[in-house]
Length: 232
Picture 1 (cartoon, helix red, strand yellow):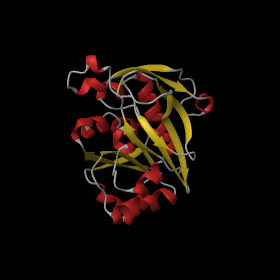
Picture 2 (cartoon, helix red, strand yellow):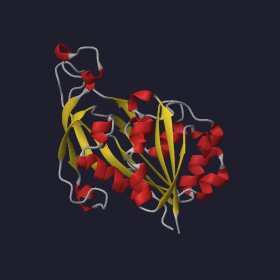
Picture 3 (cartoon, helix red, strand yellow):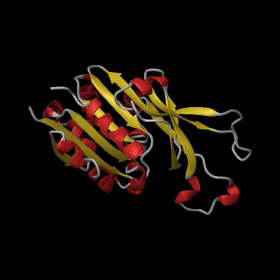
Picture 4 (cartoon, one colour):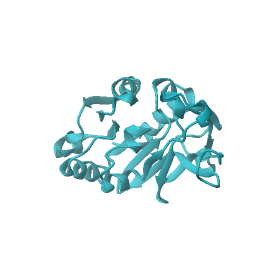
């Protein structure tokens, strides 16, 4: 039976939602998914569409969502549909909706900047060289098994989260004289979440196209989508 994937993309253009999701559409098709693309989360309010969907790949940074659409998304995940995404497209969506944040299990708080002496007023002010560390669970999990700790130079997400997440990888924000915190902070970088009969997958790495094409990041996202999708 052909499974169905719904790609929902939009919101802030700085995360290149069209180009970023297009990187993964061929992979979904190669793995037997019929892919539908929408540019508005209002599609979540269509109960028939959601009932037929096995995986939502979402890339919608910030933006807003109606109560009807959010209810449709939550009900679909509870019923067994998978939800997957990366970076702000899933962890910084619909900031005003606490019910969405509960569903996903983590919310972007900040991405710390460089030393002020090296800040130039551009996007790269928040690009840091940091390590993604695979957890003990991650070394056994099908999404991250066989992947070693790896380094990235991009935005390092600080995420507010809860204990229902199964954390497969973390990243640690160090203490710096120019930041106000006083001890290192370890934040989830890759996690999964069981919600009803459904599954949620999140990778915080994915700010730009080059990061999404990093072999480790791309492998994790591809495996994460397959893991999250409803089994037929």
